[in-house]
Amino acid sequence: MVTSPIGRARRLARRRALWGLAALVLLPAIAGAHAVLLRAVPPPGATLRVAPRRARLWFSERLEPVYSTASVWSEATGTAIAAGATAVSADDPRLLSVALPPLPGGAYAVRYRVLSVDGHLLEGAYSFTVAGGANGR
Image 1 (tube, rainbow, N blue to C red):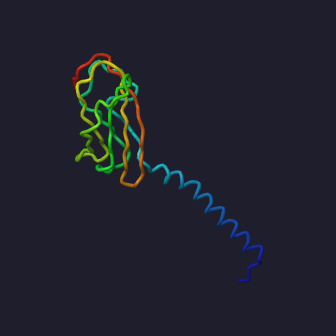
Image 2: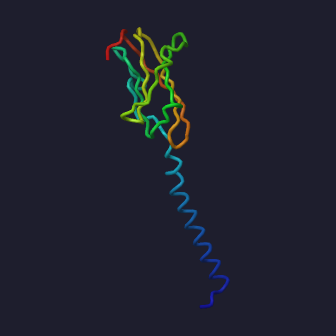
Image 3: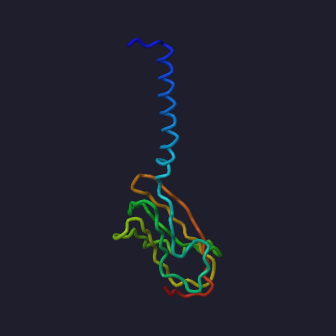
């Protein structure tokens, strides 16, 4: 079968267009595979009557325990309230938690820095408020 140069150029253009379309469809799915915060207790923006005993954060990807941390800060003073005893759960490698001391009423920020097993770093923060005080749950 003899193919003209115009026919070959058309086939090549079609292949390139198909590869380009495939890249447009697949690349956002690949880029979206990084870890994201799915939910947290206490929830972002929450006002609580009773202070929590732990801050718990669930992510969309498994976390590297050695490189994943969380801390809780007083928004009034800008000081760390809980900056240690952070742990990735052995039962759920997507769960990061940090123990909290008794919290008086006030505004707090949860800051996190996690490394997912796919090698991507995620940093973020959110706030919550304790209307009462003293840990309860």
